[in-house]
Image (tube, rainbow, N blue to C red; front, side, top):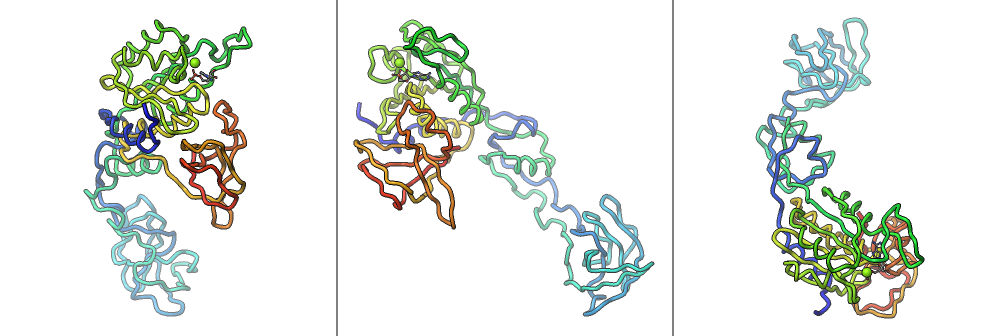
Length: 401
Ligand code: AMP
Ligand code: MG
């Protein structure tokens, strides 16, 4: 099989993935999820003319240049109904959010006034309409406020609350299972008995990244490089939307995930990528279950998650146009590599200085070095055919997230 360029692999993933069904949840459970319905305003916003400041509600026609003296005939605070009308020569003391009394068309902030007994002196006249929030100026009843496909962050959640949206229709969370494979792999807390054994990080990185991406994730632990164990696993995954495995997908004798995947009823969409690290990535489908067979090398495994699995999980949750975002930054140090055949994603850090973005890369460029993520906040993209990048040259970066 030919190596697949990254952009093509991403397109194939996106084409293969379907949106999950929707469900109705109570507002607070909608946080971090994607709206599956258009939401309209339940009323005019604001729903009545009200004051934007603490001050005095007056008639603009009473205000002339210089100081004006008005009789204070009442007071209205937030939550109370005004029971006086502002006639010529009068003012009503008003507080932020209180309804503007009839007759008034302007609010003078308290800082521009001086009250003496029953009179207020307006020291600075303002234009008609100043400091009044008009009914419907933000939204009209029935106006569309959020479209289906919008990610519900805290801001949107607040907006939904403001239109009394108690139950919200959202896309279901993908059910994801994570499994690591490898005779040498020992899980967190297990005793490492021999020098040839290694501590597993992959299943935990993937668990965490999938949770960060809004999924319901289960740990299925670690299985040996065993035909029976891997086959049993592959044949029983249909209850999950997405299965993430690590290890066993390259060219080794015991790389059973790739050897058994078709025998277990999966259709392979692609196997190897023209990407470094993360060449041996297997993407397959069985019914509605997607399988990403990710490489065992810890960095390759996370890169494959960020660049391919995350876009799939985002689309399933309703974000159809999610793709990694690219910025341009200036490299501060020369970079070189021996082999330019594949597109390389190097862990790097970018920052802003005097309006420009700069980027430096981690010296740990190899695929087994998870420490290359320490202090990193982006990938630096080194395109196919490029062997050297020079200090000062512009490079593309993808922020981590
Ligand atoms: P594989 O993809 O199975 O050929 O493994 C490639 C490399 O990744 C080997 O050095 C493995 O020991 C290592 N590796 C495999 N699984 C894990 C894991 N769960 N956590 C950390 N490293 C792993
Ligand atoms: Mg292995």
